Length: 147
Image 1: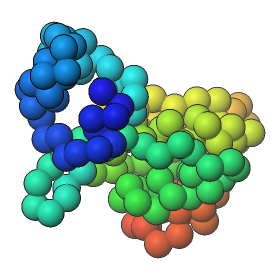
Image 2: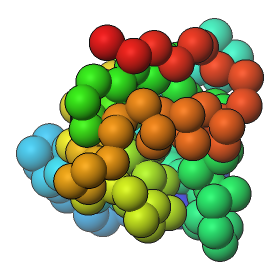
Image 3: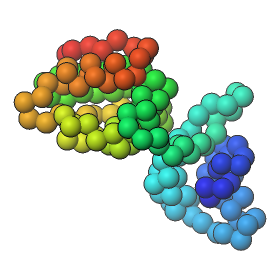
Image 4: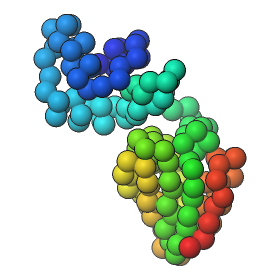
């Protein structure tokens, strides 16, 4: 599956299942969906078509997080010890994975939906502090807001 997704534009799970079947691998839609999620596959627009793409192997340090925030973060809002990051549809898992891999000392963990990430900060750490750090890492994305 990884080789197929890295070597060609695949726009649907049905198309991916057909390609895998041609290679002698029969899979169910549920298996495909689970595998795509585990691989961190996201849908992106390329040449006017939406296709699945796999994330690259993350570089060390904050560089991967910087890249994901720059590419996907649309808005960052803080409230109390929480931060909410908005992304385009399908982008939240990639950013949350980068946040988790960055091992930020002020962050306990993340929960990602389709286009929204909840970042939970450690006790005594204001969400605004973490939001500002994320903004400085991400560079030129939408304004950070405090709720």
